[in-house]
Image 1 (cartoon, rainbow, N blue to C red):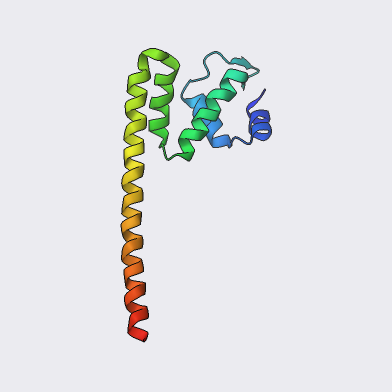
Image 2 (tube, rainbow, N blue to C red):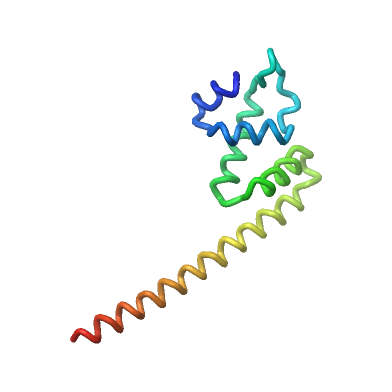
Length: 116
């Protein structure tokens, strides 16, 4: 399957496919007439890349994670450390936003109370 076919069939943005090729994560993919040919394993890895994008990983973080992933089980502890770090960052952001909501609700309360 070509890059265009993969993008259209699986709704994978071209930018992600180009990142994937740039990182040389598809070293087992056959190149035919200058174009990568994607197989099922590539599509599974691309699904993981899309998930990493969706949960807030930056391009360099995705590249690092995927290179570890391709090395297999020997990198499980490092990948778990990366995922825990991203989870902790996400929780920090959530707590920050919750505090903002509390402040906003307090101001709404004070404003409403002032009208009475």
